[in-house]
Amino acid sequence: MTVESLSLLQSSGLLPEGLNVSFKLLPAILVLSMLGLFLVIGFVFRVADAEDMWVAGRSIGNLENGAAIGANWMSAASYLGMAALIALSGVYGLAFVVGWTTAFFIVLIFMAAQMRRFGKYTAPDFVGDRFNSDAARAIAAITTFLIGFVYAIGQARGMALVGLYVFGDIGLLGLTGYQSMVVFMMTITVGYLTLSGMLGATKNQAVQYTILIAAFLIGLYVVGFSQGYSTVLPQVEYGQLIGELGSEFSEPFANESYYLWIATCFSLIVGTAGLPHVLVRFYTVESERTARWSTVWGLFFICLLYWSAPAFAAFGSDLYAQEVGPVYGANGMDSAAADVIVVLATQLAGLPQWFVGFVAAGGIAAAIATVAGLFIAGSSAISHDIYTNIINPDATQRQQVLVGRLSIILLGVITTLAALDPAAPIAALVSYAFSLAGSVLFPMFFLGLWWENTNREGAITGMLTGLVLWSIPMINEVVPNYLGGVEGPLVAGLAQWMPAIGSALIATPIVFAVTIGVSLLTDEPDLQTKMLVRQCHSPEPMHETTAAEAVASSERTDSGTPADD
Image (tube, rainbow, N blue to C red; front, side, top):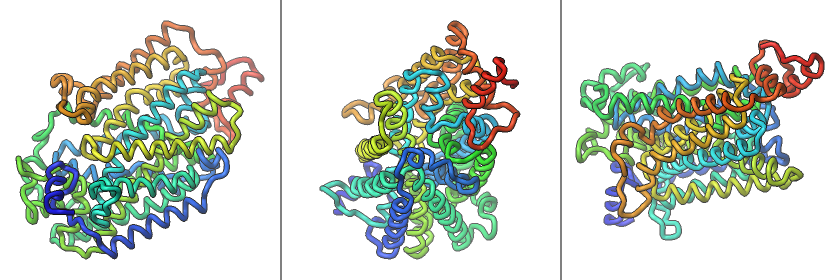
């Protein structure tokens, strides 16, 4: 890479300033060995039928599923983007810690066991069967596919930025170093997913969680100890640095408004509870008890990293100010450098290359694990919900798996193309997907499980309303980044009160109101559907292999009356 092209990439925000971009043998061996391991696991646990492809044969235990939830959840946005936002925006970045953590309590209390009782294959499966509508199923499936696409763009950016440290500019097809790394990383990810399906992805995610949490915590402790920042508890001791990091890091709402903090936090809460690739994990276990315990384990695993991210941001910001330049102001740290602050901190601390490569490998594992969950959910929406349930009900197992694999490849191609020139930093890109899930799917899951009078007309109207409301700020702020000569936002007032990163604050209550209103104005669901909803949260225990639908049918046949709530 020439000095001129390096300068151009850094000025365009695609290359992290201060990061040593060159090929490094030991880190490369480490990362390639890790990627090879993922491929081997994917091959060993490759799938042959739809049950293994979409729900891992419902054979996953609570600890393993908890680790998979952790890996599924802790993407490049958690591993890299959260520390980046805290480093750049201070207290505003804590909206991600608070929002994502709070959301799992909602999932634990209101959705995990109830979704498992419903006992389907995919999130759109729930929508289609709960509301007895192929139209509702199709809208949910398209939304799931769209969430996978938008969410994965941030993961591809994270993988590529970290991969640059390890492999340097590999120069594929005349692309820049960053773009070549996007293509390289996404090719490997799509390769193992097309082999493994949900079964292999789950086995891989347990391994990926171990790698990412070890890399993150060991990296934090070594940086803190070697630089004299901390000894045994860096998650607390980093507070001694706050007075030296500037008001932008520590002063509440110095960088972003109180309203934006609330909007972002709310969108992350409802978005998490509406993400198909998170909720589908409860279909991979054998019982509702396992679903609940796997959520508890997942929350514990996630908290280990979230508790540590602010400390890594503080250490990285201080080292950046000492070694590279000012963190804040006109010539301050750019978004690309912030997005790799975790890796950059270990490099600026003067730690050995193999160790920096180990921390980088954790970032790549985090991104790949989440892309796996997203692509499995997105491809199942196309293969199972649209192809098998709507287009070709007589599809064989072989045809379903083939369509699923082709869907993974399609998602991989469009994600790669969009990530070649992403519109925003990692955490912001991911947040757009949360706003979509919170605006369209969360109201359907919550009302579908807890209000038996929610009907088909209400669900369809509500989801279409959510899609429209989500699209408006995206067109206002994000789409202009992909159009030459047009600068966003198109309407400044709209961006202030309905920001793309937190649009669910406005959209979700409206979708709830529309869904409830239309349901009240149209015919109630039939008795069988009401009994199904009651069975999902009935206090009566249910056999592990039984679904709520079968129990509701049996009770109606026996008594002709609804089950007790």
